Length: 205
Image (cartoon, rainbow, N blue to C red; front, side):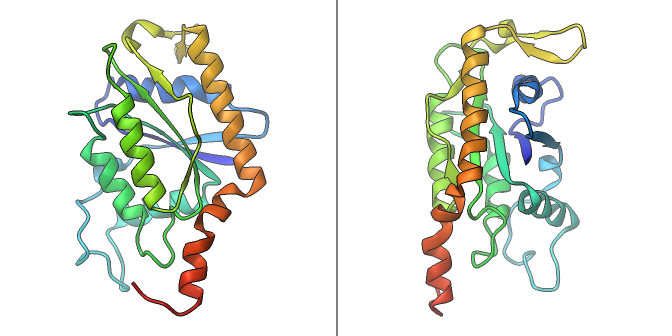
């Protein structure tokens, strides 16, 4: 089972990128988490660039990575009470073409790391809503919201980030196991089934 991990922050020392690295060892047996690091290369979504003749190379790489993955983990900061533009832009590209989008039917775990105490849940709420509208299946809560993350992400002996908060570690493990179970059960396929049936019937939007 191959999972695509994505950090919604482009910052080199991002807490969210560190959280993504820290949850990779928590994956259940048989799950491999690969990290996609090219969100910053994606141009802003523009339908004029999205043509049958081809799309920009970074877009093609992104879509192919999403399409080949069995599921996704998106770890994102909260900016101004919502998701960062880079995350929404990536989702916009992965949600097209609407008749055969890479994102359709994907099971997704969402997480957030924040340096404060009161941030994160708005971003995860908005992210879940956007993914739902793209016919992806988002694993339900309780969510991983790592507050004061700068104090809870430490370097282990392997020099890889680790979560020092036991409750967050348990919750992240539960979320990853739920992701694996949803993929095995084909939940994402059921989520996208109405859309596929709509287009199979020859309707258009």
